[in-house]
Length: 437
Ligand SMILES: Nc1nc2c(ncn2[C@@H]2O[C@H](COP(=O)(O)OP(=O)(O)OP(=O)(O)O)[C@@H](O)[C@H]2O)c(=O)[nH]1
Ligand SMILES: [Mg+2]
Image 1 (cartoon, rainbow, N blue to C red):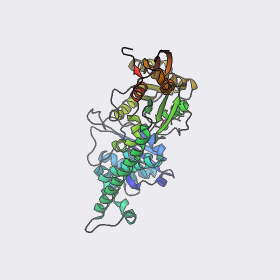
Image 2 (tube, rainbow, N blue to C red):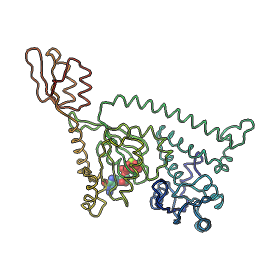
Image 3 (cartoon, helix red, strand yellow):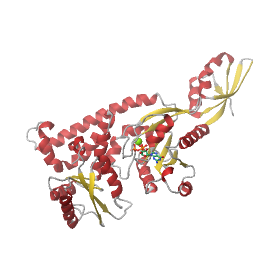
Image 4 (cartoon, helix red, strand yellow):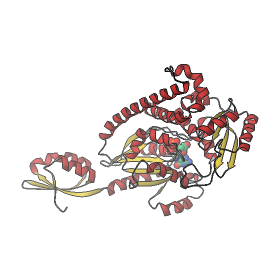
């Protein structure tokens, strides 16, 4: 079961799991409708460290209110669990507290039931390395747990000693709710502090051009990050290898540089609790000037992955934020030209690369250089000769094309980023832009 009951050690011996996927008709108003994806679920379960012993699927017009799957299917599931000696049942769908409770009752105490959200939360919990991501995951877990407390009852009863003392006249359940509510408040407060520290750091980088890598989990974001920056971000063929944000500076040439951030990947039906509690990590994405949307071109259904990523991004960044599509893992597709033709129609600016190939990294680097250059223009400035010394920072951030001094004034033509020019002009009132330049 989920929540604080997630014990990292529990997955260490390979638990035997049965997967259940219910295919529902697609309904645009219902985010959890549509077909199940038991293959992706299998990858998630494998990432969590369990062994898959059987997969059950069912088509239904709608979920059964009491047990999600039908009565007959539930009996079949009970039998399969017995035959396969399974200790774990994982649903690709999300279960209501009531459905979870009923399924748990039918399967008995020796089998643990997890739904999709609980499984993803579990993976996040085991992959969280920093204080910030641990706080964020715990917050998401507790928020998910709160309405399901009765289902957790047995588990909490066992732990009750460690959880705290019961207030006067309270049932154990009320005590648990109160304690969890208090813990949630503490976590929120601690996360606010983390975010405040981060903002101080971010402010000092405000003037720099910022790029964020976004994309479906396992698309190759960290691989691209390492290729571009020489960083040593953890890369692994598993889902949600990265949970924290890493930012590095990339120098393209003497004066063109940008900051790039690699961060947590997205997935279809990403639990909304996670998106909410990962606000601090996702702030780097929200603040970026440009998003590099990395797509695994060799995935079964890249379009569906793109749509899932866009959906999460919608709540994070304005639609107008510049985005560049990077179709990665081109080395894994049978016919690269077919992939190019297919996607460049919809995304004419898209890049097609392999992040494992230095030529792929160069292509991304070149495009970023072009983006930065397109953001520049030539400024014509005038200033008193006696103030020439203030031009130091201009020379460092811009490309001086011409500098002519006559009598007491100098004229300078300089190519630079708009943001840099505005900042420097505001700082030095003696330097003025020649009108109409
Ligand atoms: N063949 C091939 N494999 C790649 C390429 N890029 C990345 N990979 C592999 O894909 C797997 C996932 O790569 P990561 O860079 O960890 O992916 P990610 O997007 O950061 O994934 P998360 O952090 O889990 O969201 C790793 O095994 C990489 O070696 C590529 O261009 N070609
Ligand atoms: Mg990664």
